[in-house]
Amino acid sequence: MNRDRTKKHWEEVWSQKQPEETSWHQDQPTISLAMIEESGLLHSESLIDVGGGASPLTARLIEAGHRDITVLDVSGAALRRAQKRLGPKAEKVEWIEADVRAVELSRTYALWHDRAVFHFLTDPVDQARYVRTLECSVQPGARLIIATFAPGGPRKCSGLDIVQYDARSLQVVLGDHWHLLEEQFEVHRTPAGQEQKFGFYRFERQNARN
Image (tube, rainbow, N blue to C red; front, side, top):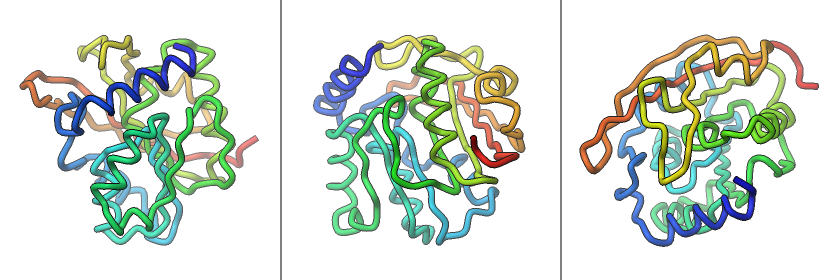
């Protein structure tokens, strides 16, 4: 899907639905929080949540004491919902409205988190663009936490095709300089009561970015 259509789709979704009505909503992003803590990220170190939009993760990170949080999302409506929910605490976060396939970030991060974006990129060209942005936006030795729909899970989400990944297939796309440290699986129950299989993968950057 081209960038204009992608933005239009997600602006419509977030203009029409409350976060709690979306199939991917989690009140408690338990695995993400556990993997971030397991990564050893200091509260002063930088973290970016790609596709974080209206996710409760940002609030949980602030509560945990993290002080350098960036949220990137293609949907301005999603970001505004998150900012409204956080109230004055939203000032503690840097918010970026952009498509990860095209953005040039002005800084680098010690940890990159994504539970919302990568599995929607069905075109290998878009996958390569995502990886390029990742490579240009993380520090040497950075941590990467990425969650995707797992084999046996849904093949569509929000009316869009997705790609299912296991650790091996994800490693192929990311490249061998990302070292897999941990994987966990979750059966997520949607607000409608359906089950979705997710895989969570924690990597570490093995050498300085190109």
